[in-house]
Image (cartoon, rainbow, N blue to C red):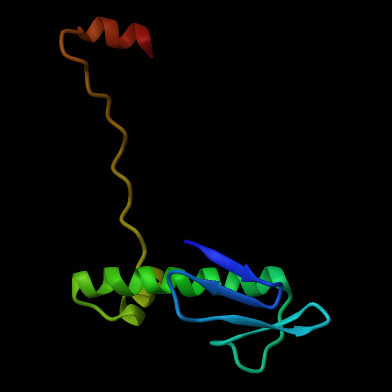
Length: 102
């Protein structure tokens, strides 16, 4: 992800067409957040979020979902439980060696 601040008045990215523009007094407006004024750090974070959405959009297309479906399901569906950790013996080791290592 490559966010660029140009002349202290414009924030752009190589990975999204969204932009942020300085409105003076450390205020920034972002193309997809109409009506909100942010500080520089927030504006840069917003552009990074837009970059992340572009990445999810590409991945969603690969799995046959919309971006909103992908994000919604990833948030709403709980992850599977992790299986209990099992130790796998290295080739040539004995069960006695494994017991003394742990």
